[in-house]
Length: 352
Image (tube, rainbow, N blue to C red; front, side):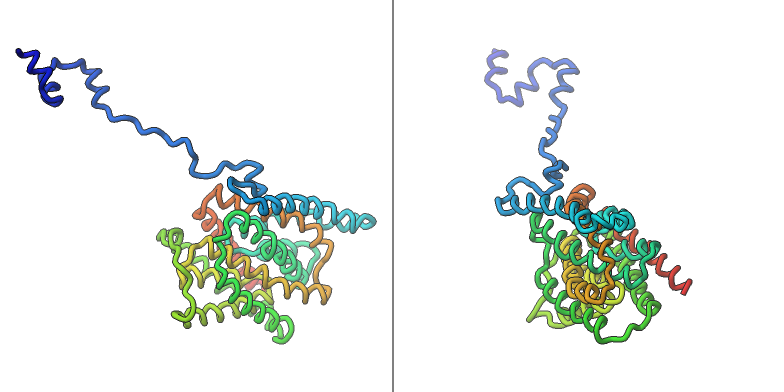
């Protein structure tokens, strides 16, 4: 009778009436099941196919672009030797510029709003180039590095990183400011420009560091404020772009950082979208400025030709660096570079 009652009782009652199990068996039953680790990685695996731009689901047209870029890289490597076959000493003089260009192109293409001028100008001044030549060289390299190569790389990776309205407004006002500086406004002197630039980059470093520390900068992703609901915000962005154009006309950089601070602070846009948008703006603004510098004969041509392969390689490595290290580390590196630039600017002002 007792056995029949046990067998016909509910399962919870039968557990109470059945003899106790061994302690090991009880522990095994009581232990919660171990979670199964996911086999799919959160980040894509960094392979040579990923580096050159081949990703899952890539379209046929994008694949044509990837292979076309590799052919272009081969051409740019051969080009200096073809042009200066009888003047190889020029290639020897500019031997370091491709490596410098890789660094200068990788940093902005990875998501930090830093155009190549910050890297190029101080290093080239250690060589035999004057400040005007260094600015002209930086402008001409930015025209290709962040005006063509880096935006095309991101178009293949993720075309949603571009804030198109900000690009149109920034380029229009920035080009106006650059052309006014190069063709109409007298040069106020390197000291005055350096002081203004120092104030802006110090404010940008502090603002970006504060945003990273609070954690809001990395997660914000608001829609850009635009007409007709927000005319004041658009007008302010236009004025900021014009002032950035003035700085870019004098020292080849400036609009990228000022525009980045306006987008992330006032419009609360995503830092990666803001950064890629800003370097695209400074690259496109560098096109008319480069034409002026080329016409005036201020660009050291052989330095520029030798550096082009490095720009192309850096534009391919930038998105890979962003994926490998993440947005936080990229922005932290950005703040570090700004702090170094602040210290260097203070030293230059003290010497002058």
